[in-house]
Picture: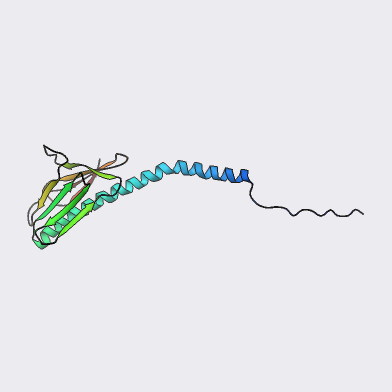
Length: 159
């Protein structure tokens, strides 16, 4: 009878080669998914900005009617922001566009300095002025937020 040779306990774990293969696969998937994820985020930011502009203008229109005061909306391309003022003391609101979204143009185009801030007045009981804001994200996707002078409702148009 032969004596049993004691066996070394089996070692469990992951080898370096297996670990490198897993890391390489994860890196490959992340590299393939990154452009679509950033594109989706840019689209969401553009949608958020167009909704925010629409809501901002709608707030001004509603306030002019409800409070019976004149509202001034200033659109400043250089600051990438919109401000709202009223004849009421202390009333001012500001809307800054999110990172990656910029104001490209203010419609209708005005001769002269295109970068100068534009001002629009909203009168109580009056028809709103016909104006719009053209915005763009990093991927050059554009949207126009226009005020319909007949209904007074801001509308978002894809470009």
